Length: 218
Ligand SMILES: C[S@@+](CC[C@H](N)C(=O)[O-])C[C@H]1O[C@@H](n2cnc3c(N)ncnc32)[C@H](O)[C@@H]1O
Image (cartoon, rainbow, N blue to C red; front, side):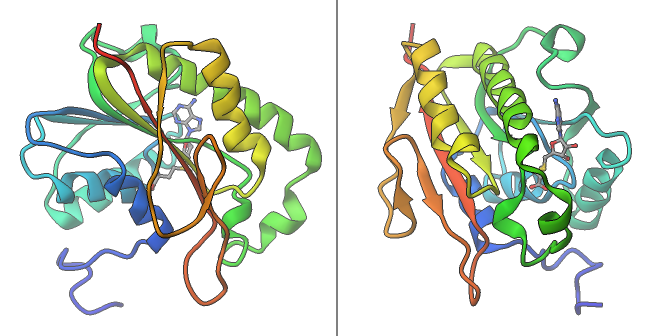
């Protein structure tokens, strides 16, 4: 019902989610992957923030959620290549061309967005966190393998738990000794040594976590 929303003049995105795109350092000509894309808020923000990207691929494993990405792209008159796949199963979908930029907005406990989805307090279990962390680290290692030398990967969650956030990055850095953690110099959030955390603010943004990783040139 927002004026001009259906015409694509505006989008609705929390401030914390908007920060993901700004951390990607997008430049014309880059090949970009949005690895966990649905419903597509960040895919659209990527396309809107840099007009001349060479290609944007948006993947989601959910058959139900992926059409939402296309709806958002259509509303904004944008285009991307959409794939329904398990992003971590790269043999199933990857064409062999590495990416300059990857956004990995992983599935998580969503504990940073409880104010919008209060059912999370009832439905999430402590026992969910370890399996989620395994999926997150698996996705991160898989996406790292298809990042170009010199490329940048932004890892993000809407979780407030260390197990899904900076501890994933610390575990990843132990496994990938050449990966470089890029410090996020910012006036917002908390420096977690391996990434930056925003805690939810009742009058402002959601809770989010971000880490910026770069692969050195060969
Ligand atoms: C936090 S949401 C992504 C939100 C999205 N980036 C946005 O800004 O609109 C996580 C998404 O990851 C998808 N997902 C979970 N596991 C996946 C996998 N192995 N491969 C690809 N997508 C996956 C879920 O279906 C879900 O849509």
